[in-house]
Amino acid sequence: MPEKKTMDRARQDAREGKAPSTQAGEFVREEMDHIREGKHGARSPQQAIAIGLSKARRAGVKLPPPKKGRVSKETETRAERDYEKGQSGRHSKPSAKRSRATSAALKKEGRGAASHAALSRHAKIAAKARKTRGTVGPSRTRSRSR
Image (cartoon, rainbow, N blue to C red; front, side):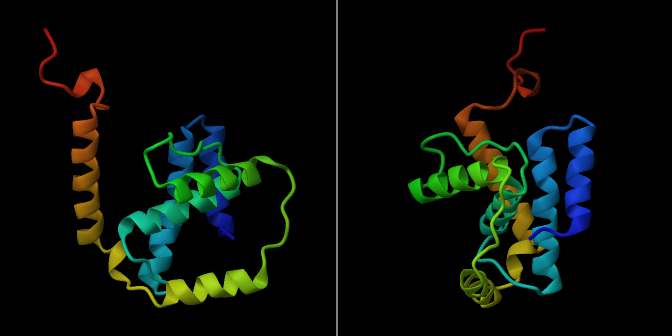
């Protein structure tokens, strides 16, 4: 369950008309804080980000699941399920046994995933991947005619 201040910040972003990814960023930030505080760990920055995005979708942020083929089939299915869960008005109480198991598994993971060095490495790799995919906007390319 996300913290109240995170939900408030995300709602504030929504009221200001900011993109769903910006709203979801609040949940990712919370996740990084939890790892740094030692509440739990993560294997990689990607896992920490995925946990934050999942929380955002379940909290009702209109963040659509990733496009087909971008992530593994399991991740795709989970993201779709989280999105549907968040968009439906009903929220059932999470399974206590599953919740405990997830917390126990995350507690065994390392804390380095939220370090500045790890996040910097991830940002560089993600930027390089975007560049090769060709999704950089026209304002950022050098070959633009003047």
